[in-house]
Length: 242
Image (cartoon, rainbow, N blue to C red):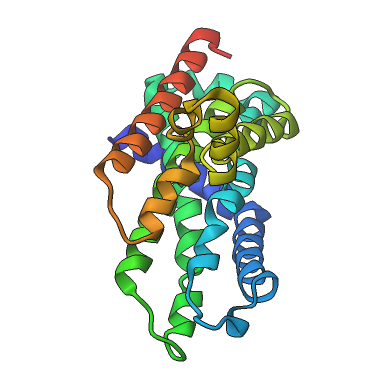
């Protein structure tokens, strides 16, 4: 655990000692607020609620999280510091988990700052805080999957832009296959297989949480995919030894 915390602190410091984390957090909060208040004007709704706010979470996270994770391994390889890092008395899996937790921490901070939206609106309309809690839990769950996926994508190349594009593409696929119109299209095209494929999409599971439901299947889904990508990440690190 001490080794994981060492890597975690190292990576968090790298984020916040540079503009990366601050730029990400500001843009993330601004874009979500813009989409909610401007693209889907909250105050013009006949029955205003936060559904449109949470609707965007899987999509925005799938694009922004790769921007956080793209440097985790690519930058190490580009700068050559990975060789020094691998000489430390650490197991590869400890480095993998430490880097993953650092990326997830940045996302968690970003999500926490978006709470200003429901907190502000609670003064002008009734807010179902149980739904708010489950929605943020669902957002953190799918964020965990995206961070693990993005961290693995970062091991594929020393070019951060390539890592970013690969992670965005895969993350958008994961969102898209669970999006209802896509599921319906796949059902029509493949004769009912769309529901099975859609189960692997992050959007379908997040929508359950955004309705105020904590589905154990969704928790297992998020945990399993996170572990899968972390294991894949570790295998690539161990196999290539950079």
